[in-house]
Image: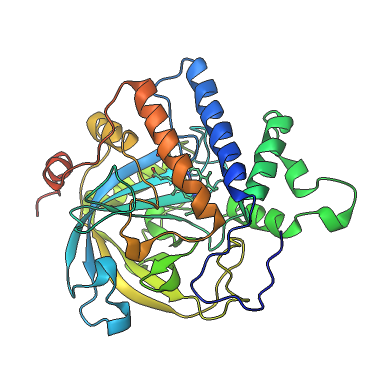
Length: 356
Ligand code: HEM
């Protein structure tokens, strides 16, 4: 259903009438996918998206000291507030494939020790921010996600071209989405610590709507080239964090125009200016022991681990609410591991910084 921009208000959601049942379909298809993975006997049963992680790292998330009043919202309320953050770097695919294959790259940030009421009943102390290395998502809305899943199923392991070109009628082609996918898959990524990430979907910032982005500091660059190892992205992070810290700026941009910056279409890039609201510091550390990798596997991120001030907005995010929770519950159950968020103490002792 197309939504006219006449009479739309900034910061507001406009869910289509038939969305709830479409979200149930997405949830069911995702659950069936994980159950099929379980039948293969491969252990552990992984996330059905962003299955492979390069690693989780311990970081500091430091709020800017001089934010204007309109930006002192939620976790950004207190100037210079320092949060411990657990950051998971991943590939986008649901398969644990080689890093040499074209794919989205994910950076999921979990702030620990966040006080205040949260949107989900199961988690009381964290604020998550999930991002990928492209400014927009390749799916507009919930109904299109179903078409995408259907095309994947019928493609039987081949690229789901039917989603982009469902018939000979060019008016039905999804060229915009096709170009986004192509652009995501063709990026040459030297290291997860050297690329920019975006939320792609909006969220609240108090009464306004924003998108956010995480931008690497220029001195993160190691000037290395891509090796032919299938785990080269983890290896690049290991090499980097063996000797020097990495830094990122956390940026937000406000929705300033309802037509040009829609809430309900995650394929449209917003063009409003970015404002820096926090700095992320990842000190030198080693993060790839079997215990650390297992800890990372068993974490759960969702944009709905959130204060109401940062509530996710738009159809794709409304779908993510039940899907992430069901998939996380199911994989923990099938793997026989408990599903809980880390405490700062537990996390910091497993992920010590390197001395000196
Ligand atoms: C309807 C749309 C989407 C669906 C159904 C979906 C589904 C999922 C699922 C099932 C997981 C694994 C959850 C778990 O087992 O803990 C996941 C992880 C993830 N998704 Fe999505 N996703 C959607 C949209 C997006 C978008 C728009 C982004 C853009 C930022 C995104 C970024 C991520 C990232 C970074 C992770 C990895 C989180 C981690 O490190 O654990 N997803 N997604």
